[in-house]
Amino acid sequence: MNRRDGFALVGLALGLLGSLALMGGPRGFSAGMDFNGASLEDWMGPFYQQALSVMRGEAQPVEGFIYPPSAAVLIAPLAWIGPALLAWVGLGLQLLSLVVLVLLVVRLGRPSESRLDLLLLGLATGSCYPLLHSLHWGQMGAPLAALCALSLLLWQKERPGPAAWVLAVATGIKFYPAILWLPRFLVAGVRRVDWIAALVVLVGLPLAVFGSDAIAFGQQVLDRLDVAVGAGGDWAGSVNRQGFAQVLGRLLGFPESGLLERAFSLALLAAALWYGRTLAMKEGWAMGAGLLLACLPLFPGPCWPHHLGALPICWWLAAQRGMSSRVLVGFSVLLGSLPAFVLYGGWPDALSMGLPAWSGVAVGLAFVLPGDS
Image 1 (cartoon, rainbow, N blue to C red):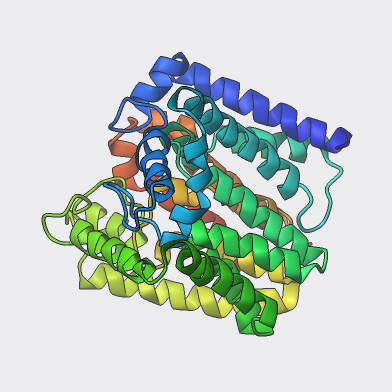
Image 2: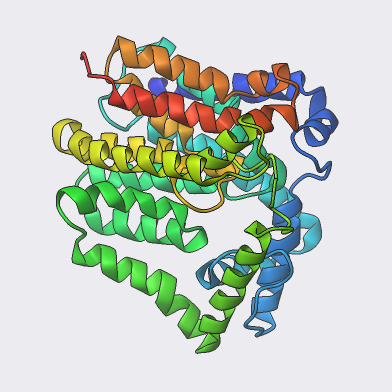
């Protein structure tokens, strides 16, 4: 750590304390972040229960667990922690992930000596609604964002082996970090170490723990997802979904996205993939990865607010492209912030409007603008 890190961490602390004050303290934070008033609900619920299930030798997802079998194996050590201590461990993991995320992000791309930039990055991270949403639920948004930043930094330092294993672990918990492999695949192809790491974590670990039952485990998860997103499912019409097609559908007055919204979203995704390849070739692989992280709401599949926890990575990288991009980055920071969430009416209005998704769109455009620096 150095003095540069200190300014970023001071900004993070100010952002977190300001967010807590804005919500009226810990109780107000828990009551106002989402429809549920309980903190760390996913961490203390499905994650912990799944860890206990794995330790009992059961090869099936518990109620509410909708993650790949590799995730069940990776979180199994939670069973060694008693429920009284588990909440503190979960809170500590979220806060530590935010600290690590900030320290890693300031090292991505070109180093900045601007104390103001560093302070603003920390402040934006500490008031980022998707990250605070991850903290509230005890979700994996903040830890996965830190793992994504670590993987990008390792690749930047030309250490592809460790980078591949870090990204494989992140993908083993939830699939969406795998999009970081796309720019490498589009530019130079995925290396052998990437395939080995992904296969070991996603396939080898579940088979080693569950045996052939790992396949049935994964199928049950897929069936649950299919039911949840189908007509009458738990996720049907949920205002929390931040997929761009769902956001457009709600804005047009439809609870579920139609063919027009899905087609438009996929067209934008195709353009992002094409431009991400161009950006990676001209300005560096990390820039292409940053664009695709920002475009996560365009990818098919459920997208929740905590999935956008990597927005600080996008903000930092896009801001390095010049002043015109910085304007859009500032707009994105505002849209993705807790103050914007509160000013727009909190839950459900702010999420129904899709503020986190629009934040991703704004910073995505910052990658598309011609760089001027």
